[in-house]
Length: 425
Image 1 (cartoon, one colour):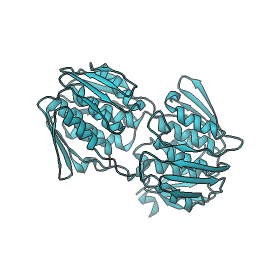
Image 2 (tube, helix red, strand yellow):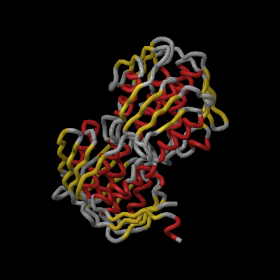
Image 3 (cartoon, one colour):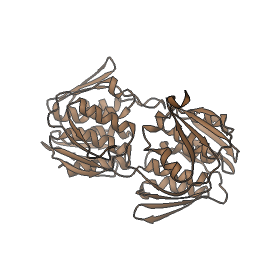
Image 4 (cartoon, helix red, strand yellow):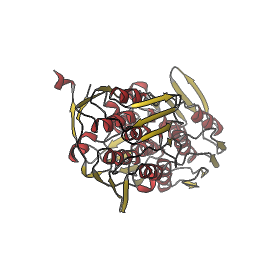
């Protein structure tokens, strides 16, 4: 099992190219099931979840090709799909497998998808996916760890999500584009990844109104065709590197980013004293503050402060003067990184969904364990400013969502090394 060894105390300076967004690429790959024509996806991030999704589509008998290795572009053709199942063995580490449910039912009339795995950050039920599919006329059942859905053809309907759900919105959007009649999705997620999926579906011939808003109106069509689509930049990776530049006292230029997707993060970091300049053409420059100051954060659905940036902000807050209040409203079990940061010397108090981080606090290297994808990133950031050496275990979590993060950090001056089990012998 791989680990990171990090010697902290180095300022980061240089340029970092932001990869494509994993959370946009995964629903786009699943949406390729909606047509028999080739779908070309560009700016694909080279991360573990993408490889898992590619294996899943290949298992379903899709043609999955890439002109380069490791892949940065996929050509997916679901012409001869004969398997309508996402088995547990393939998808137990990846929650995004549920995104194949909607496209499979919409095009083939049947789907059997394993209940999703992924990070241990709390309950992320699929009941809203099921309720919405049933509203569109599907017959569903959940048994033996699988969701099964059937429909001769889905029918348009109006459905209001009781709670905002990103994957739920994406799943039902991809189902509704081939449904008979009009579907209206209310209280839909407005995340950039949802917008990116909608824009790709429109390229494929879907009829969708209200893109980027909380109400999506879809006129079902009989079939979709192929398209070429470039995945949007990863806003969470960009946010992570903004914090990396700020927390280490350095200066980083982020290229291939999209600042308009990072409004809440940029606003929060500026409130902490960080200098961030948007230079156009997808470039952002971050300069460390002369003095970091505390600031309060509440995680919210987009366009609010993303829960996926909470752990990274907590690392920054340990170095800010004053007490920062961090309130987590999206997931109920997303403070597991706090106890690991406390092992490094952080002053953090947890009270339910509220964390109070007092700083600035000198951090010291220690052995710590990553519990989920974004917790991994938070621990890496903390280790970058800690004295001595930090060993982070279970970094397979970070590999699920960050493309070669250690290589990118080394290129801008970090002292980080990946240790494999072989290295330990």
